[in-house]
Image (tube, rainbow, N blue to C red; front, side, top):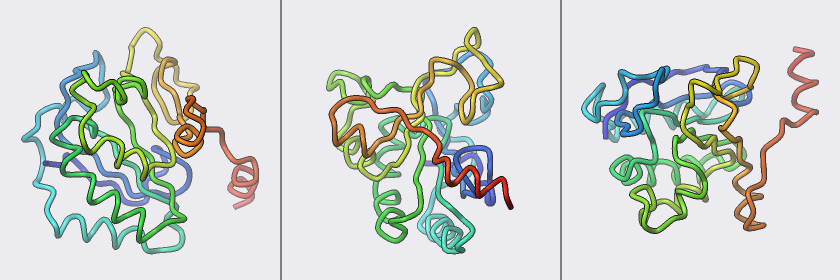
Length: 184
């Protein structure tokens, strides 16, 4: 797997200060995608053990609240194979830090055995996540007022609650975090 970019101290792709990995490769090709250069699977740089170690180290400071994974498309089958071990390691080493993933696939597609995105690694990846932002970007539903997503069809899914109940449960901001973050 290649990655297009890594952002340290990112505040746009999840709550708090995050390390954000943008993987390469996406077959969705959403019109007006914000990251079209990452569509090519060979774009960017090889995701090596050294890069994984650097990402893990970037999560150690207490001010870093978590990891976000975007694309490209992290849930493309070839990207899942490369990400599953890394995400399990991040979850094991930092159980209290949030892991977010953005995918153009819907929750339902990720569970449909006939869909190319439903692989032997899908369930393992989902078990590492706190929030899954699902759904393709749809230009006609673009809404700048939406937090952490670009179009109105996209959902912020509370993954642990969804896995526990078997029904899609939406994620909502923690009001305590919100009030503290406003106070500085």
